[in-house]
Image (cartoon, rainbow, N blue to C red; front, side, top):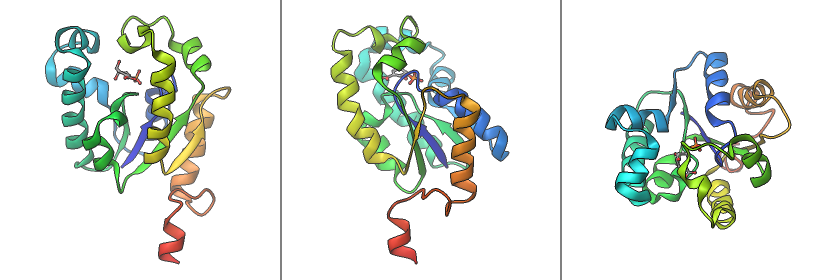
Length: 176
Ligand code: S3P
């Protein structure tokens, strides 16, 4: 499966839909799956169950989806903080859409549907996540300052022709 990770506002869902169209694969978004499974909005889950409750539901939904048939899958920005999610990502093509905090905030800063954006320690959250994204990513793509179409194109090229952009840095040592 091709999995898109990165901070809120990186464009994971927009790019993911375009990429899935280009490759003729189904698309899924973890936040949408969570809302379908619970019948609640993300904001309501945070309010009713706290972040810890949200992460539990999120991890369950993601681990199940990753075990299913191939497709393009956009993860919520904080999904990589869950150990079971990081473990389940091993073996998948994990694409990090990289963006600065300033660029992310200029895109989605005022969105009331993203409760984490309003935390006073957002800078620490952003810094703490950077290492976790990089640890799971097999390909990193710059997400800011270019169109979602360009980003999707770059990912499609890397997936269809992995020789052109190495998707898994460890693969060539092991396999060639
Ligand atoms: C979150 C990101 C959101 C959503 C929830 C928590 C986070 O998804 O899962 O609000 O912790 O970064 P997006 O990255 O799609 O905005």
